[in-house]
Image (cartoon, rainbow, N blue to C red):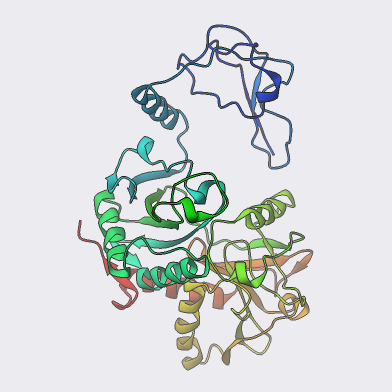
Length: 386
């Protein structure tokens, strides 16, 4: 994968202790930070398998300033301006603030929040489509279940949480995007136990993604990264390192995602999506949810697919154990989730799925979900009062 190289700004010096080379955070260009000096080169590494430090270990840096709060906030703003991506963060709610902010530089959480340094937090997501939150109730119910499994006391009751989320989207003015939200053990200290956390916390961010939607068929591979045990796989916690490594493994092999198998060798799930198949017998087949995350979008697909059974395009719908052999010989394979919706898979490892092209059932189910997001019943669409 490609990497970007740039000359280090003049405000960097070579007198910083070597032992801190891996930890130093470089401020945005044109921000005076350190007395004038020189370091040979800073490499901003984009590759997933590069391991060398960004700053040469023989170089030093010195004179780190003590910043005031206003100076730190200004640095945060300039950093945001200099590192714009395809996603825009339009609003954030924080129970620590007790309100909503729309300045992306202010979208921060305390370092002593146990979600940050211990991973003691859970999260969920809801899509925003044409001014409606899609399956918000289903996703709120799931984050509450996840919080219970993670032994996190809710910071508010269910209806208050739901109202906060709706108000955050309203403040963002976002018509199409996504809402991501977290419940954490909260800030307090840097211990392992949450007993020192004075209150649990709720955070929410509204995201507008400017990437183009893609329904083209993709390649997947079998993951070599161990799957999380069912106790952790069935809750949506922030402990996503196995998921990240699985995704990186797929990208390194030229694939979109890696497929996990459970301890018995059956098909489980992708790194952040469910898996489904159309068998030779024209059944929609999906792995059981007892050892993996219960996908809200996947369950909605199962409901919508009943229309294909009535129309005679499917002979049935089955949730069962799926062997790798059965999955690879299926007529169609697809990934299902709130991010990808329904994405056809045309190759798994070295084997083509079906005829190696996007299948008609995958396409129809994608259209069903898109239509459901735009004009589905009130049970899956919550209006946002802008």
